[in-house]
Image (cartoon, rainbow, N blue to C red; front, top):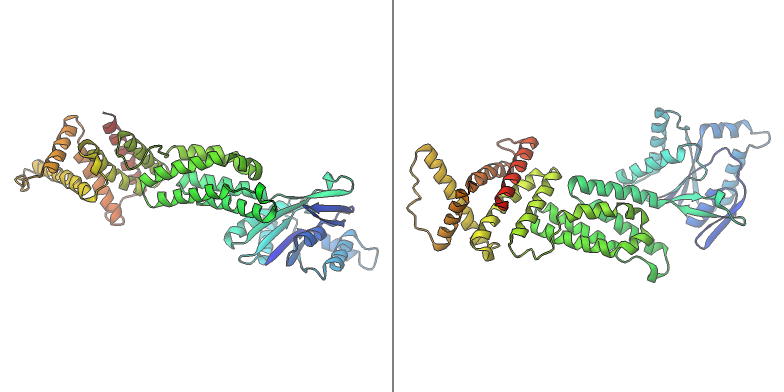
Length: 431
């Protein structure tokens, strides 16, 4: 249901012609214009206790302005919209603020569409109700379609514009979305805000030539990036981040015209994505590719996603060995398994020597590729970097993750391991 939530204060209001786009209504009460222009199914008219008390005390005498306002609205709107009257406190204490929130929540049902009129609100009431509606929007999946303000003070020749301040909520949602992206690497909220903005403009504007066409594309690219990030696919993350940067560059003009609040955070978003974007073909294994993969792994770590970082570190070691042996085969499952097998054998050899146990596998004949991998592992060790030891440590933590924390590893443990191993592998790559 489409609901308009409005206020009626104690003041005496002058008559003016309120206009929005091509529609206009002449009245002294903005809520009347809002109902006739935006056509809600229900009007929720909120009055403070003092307003109601003033109106009651005036009965049988000269009517108070408050009572006259109520009677006029009943007369003008009775055949247009259903009206419900809500009595609310003035919000002078925390207790009263919570009472207002509880009262407002009674009028909002799941999936309602809301119009919020803040024109005649008393003191801080519009702000309190606005914050309540934002919360209910998320909790009850209601949708705030518009935040209306009849700008009487901006009148010219007896006509006053109606401002839709919905963009302020957009800015709030975008800021929350970017903060969520920065903290978790999840761009879904930003993507949703972009899509909503383009959809709303297309509904409101009649000239298709002037409507935004790329905001939604950026939203889709961001959604794809989030999906790749969640699926722990660093190569696709690198590739998709490049596409997002391209879309950011292309969307500047539309942001300027249609989503100015988003422009305030666009640079932050760009800086966030640049860390993980890779300009080259991800299918070619190069040292630059490995550096960027480590950047993605650090990105996972920075977002507190230590599980994903450790999973990626294990695969990075396989990539590193492939680069030194047969980089053309680095994405072949059979070849990667061969590298894993040789590293695991080296781990067994090391453990056997430490325990004084003969390694039964030493006499097994090796293929040329296996021998090449073993020789490369020896070369790495000669440079005083025991890759097999790093591998074994990562493998142990990875197995703990795969077995759901049995044996138990805390977030602090995982963070420590991730930081240490990223540092060690960076040193390895720089040699």
